[in-house]
Amino acid sequence: MKDFLSIADLSREDILKLIETAIDLKEKRKAGKVTELLKNQSLAMIFEKSSTRTRVSFEVGMTDFGAHALYLNPKDIQIGRGETIEDTARTLSRYVHGIIARVYSHETVARLAAASTVPVINALSDREHPCQIIADFMTIQEYKGRLEGLKFAWIGDGNNVCNSAMMGCALVGMEFAAACPEGFEPDAEFIEKAKAFGGKITITRDPKEAAKDADVIYTDVWVSMGDEEEKERRFKAFEGYQVNTELLALAKPDVMVEHCLPAHRGEEISAEVMDGPHSAVFDEAENRLHAHKAIILKLMGPE
Image 1 (cartoon, helix red, strand yellow):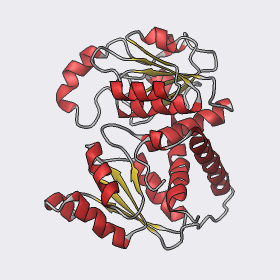
Image 2 (tube, one colour):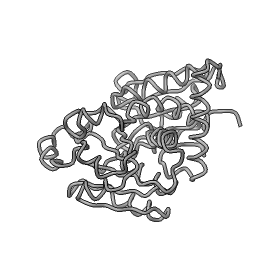
Image 3 (cartoon, helix red, strand yellow):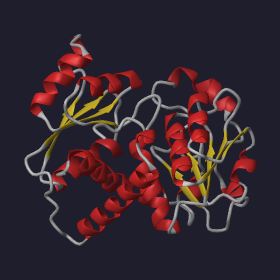
């Protein structure tokens, strides 16, 4: 595997191995062990969208590996002044050992990968957020001790993270149930892919149906970057889709709650749940670092 653009680029075994590697790297970091496995390598990081967790975790991860990360804002490089994506990829490939891209259009990261001779990682596009899912599943593994056989409930917007989560659940054997308002369901293409992977997939309008007996409840913001003009319409559509204590009461007693962050407290998730005993949100955020390191190592590490 040269690039990581979609969770579907991985097999079940790949996902489990990445989680195993991430947990090992986490333990070594906490023990203060040096893991300079990519010494003197460089990672180009193209960010069309702002970020806290993605940028910091990849930069710190490269530093942990004895390597270097370069933050590239499109306004600061020639891709923002008309240079083609392909020419940018060909040039960067001569300088660096890998590229990550956090972009508006999935086409951008796909074109980067097609023209690059070094690995390209999708750090978020309008279609998927595969890196996030590795951290999410790592956190579930830590809390539950397994992935297979669990029920994963998605509440809210069937967005890029939802697309990746749904396919990831299918690959590892988790039941997936999404409750989304009409018009905000995950893309049919990804639903069909998840079913083709053997996934048990339910798409409903009813958050209570999705949350019933869930082991994991996941939500995301109602208005993502680029959707600001739809804010009023979205808020109206998502009434009743908040993850709160009433919804958690329908899930299993040991249900864990995940959110990819940033969260809008009082909108898609209540502050009481965000800070409550079922919340795994900040463990999940920490695990972005370790999961991203595992992904980097898989693509850029020694054979």
